[in-house]
Image (tube, rainbow, N blue to C red):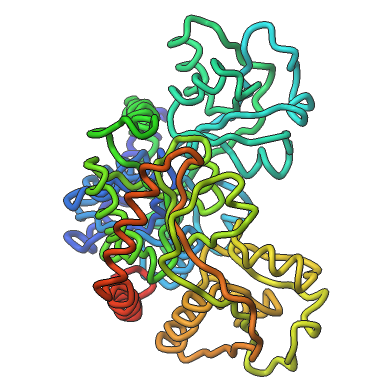
Length: 494
């Protein structure tokens, strides 16, 4: 009898939770997600369904259960928490790991997925454990591997990111890679597809659980989402979704050079560097996007964009996973050793921003201070080499960096002139807070598109498109057009 009572109590509680959310029925369930977190949230380029992934399948099921249409907003990862805290989004989703840091100030769901990163080596390899990776060249699959953990904690001789398992296998075959770090599911697939030529070493390198994020006041919504998660775990729906989206990581054909007419022209980029690349109503837009379309047309190849962290753009191009890298990439002698650049299509100055009440006046005043910059950019190098920062704090984009400055998390923020200027103006227009730029001249830099070192055909196509657009005055026109569009967008790209 007691068991029966408990069963009725559980059922009643579930009905109560779902009914309590019914007041919002037909009101859109707004989901903030980052478009560079495959296989959880991945930009597709499809106007009708611009995002796909495990998280998207899950939130669609939650919306269906609650009788609410789902509305996706693409934002940089850190904006997810900002929108959730402001109650401008109902759910945050982007392969968010359940950590004390991510849980601070928000509600986080029960885990809906667990990912283990494992080390894979060829049979007979001399590599026996994690410590041996320090002298190894390690292949990883973009989106499926914990690349930052690998670079910052394990610190192998080289990290080689690829877009597909086929490319990881090729890196083993041609001995470019000594080992690979993959999601356990991908590792099993690689081993099975290659007739057990490889093996998994020991225990996982890392293990993460993933959850959805809610405003701390949205307890009923979080409880309803947890019910759906448990239901989808029990009936195998989440397991099936995971398998499908990890398989989808391998649907991008690897770039194989100049003979690939008709194969997708893959462009890797970071999605928040206005006016070069930005999200406008959940679609990629910007100068680089329009120019890339014409380069692909010149190559007679269909275009496919892949959004990745900026730090992975050049490595993916260098490894041949992508045909072209974009998003305002500075041309430097160091980078020219690894990739081939188009002719420059834009120029920029570097700017240093500080709070309006700061007493800093010259670069020497900032030595030993905490400096913010985008990771993997020349601004980060400038902060370390020229400003001799005591510490650098990494941000996804200029708006996040300037917000960090306004909140006194950093003493100064360094970024390219156009991006810094636009972001500071936009923040001032949104909430009235202002920063100032130091009156310092920092040497001019030029932007170019990046190609694999021997891909002279793609470089020639890019140079031709750039020349044509410059002669017609279209480069400056594109800059003005997308600067104007960016300034009209809210934080959630609407």
